[in-house]
Image (cartoon, rainbow, N blue to C red; front, side):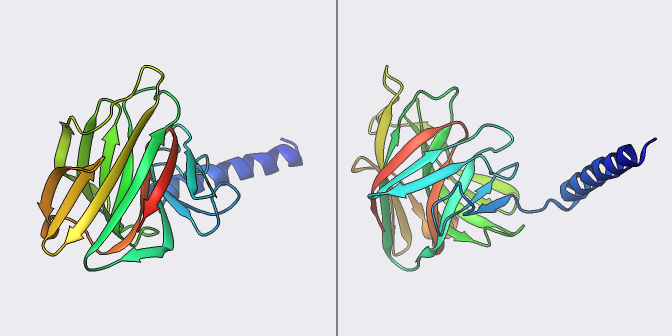
Length: 216
């Protein structure tokens, strides 16, 4: 074997070993602003590194262009966005193109340690069929607080593949109120969720979504 071939073989083996070790230790799948993300933002992917997920911010419009596997669903956050006590987080989500399959998008809140293995946050999502979902993540474990549920307040995906809904999470004392387009769709005890900490957005893979009217 030539010296060059030996060198290439060594590099290939090193890549495989590094990848294997990464799987063993389950390193955080985290990408910070490095060309694809607006300044100050990071994305934590459910799997892969999230390097194909893009976020631009211009004129109050947050535009997400999501890659496909292995850059799967992404949780986007900015360390400057935090909240405790009573607060309301609301935003209007517009799906700009037809989804290739049922997938979701919405609000993330109560986040902590998003760059580590012991990540925690809760989220409130909608998807194309006019359904909502509420869940909490603790490290690698996800608990569905409310499974996928249909509600007439949610505008479904149109014949043109577009969909627009305004989502709101309001923490008020011991209650967390979830609303879509101004209508309450669910209410939970704050103890059932993560309510204090980082907040941001959770966007499904292969989606083109714009977010406007952000109030926090």
